[in-house]
Image (tube, rainbow, N blue to C red):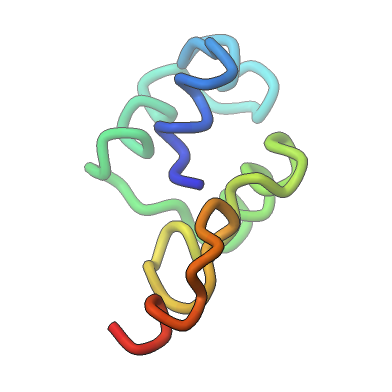
Length: 77
């Protein structure tokens, strides 16, 4: 699941998620908008705070994504 989709689904605000992660709301906004890619530590934080619903694969677009059951199609793309 994409981070922005998760945020919308959970009705989470940028400032609220930022407080939980120890970031500014602006940092969260940039991650959501794709203006900034999270580093490994940030990806791990997002993974933890989303209970595994947003995975590192969701950021890089490689391999199976947590919200898509059509793994074969993803791997052949």
